[in-house]
Image (cartoon, rainbow, N blue to C red; front, side, top):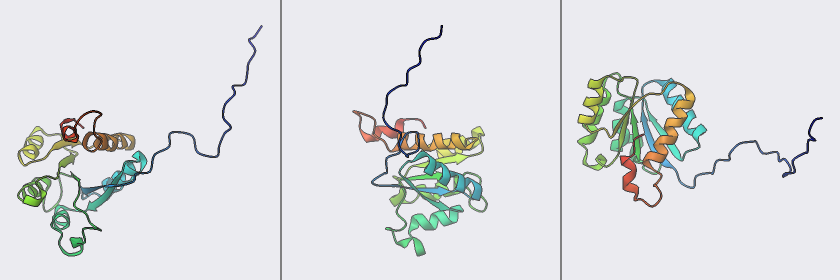
Length: 178
């Protein structure tokens, strides 16, 4: 003898897709991504979209372009269109001006001293890590493998750097590891 099966009563199905709904951000956080690889730039944009975080990503294809952006030179003088970023994701191994040289330049700019820089690199060499911290990087992260690992990284960046912990001051966010 088999037990009777009952239909569970519940709300009527809607035409909305299943899964959690993402709240629409009321404000966005400007993030500058300094990366010479087009695929990595596109993947970050897609990961930010998938994660539903309030980042607005501005991309620089090399360190020289990023220097122009941060200096507000030329087309970047319109700060309503090209705001000073709240966070910089920096590739380490780039042609012409590399991430170390960019960090040295940036940390020598008094107006940019407050802006956090996270080096996002394919290299995990101890010398690279030591050098970026010596030049003023706030964090060093090895580029994750796989799209959903990148989405998780983007979520962690949002929570670690911009979402205030309950009952704690916002300043403590920078102490949390990514």
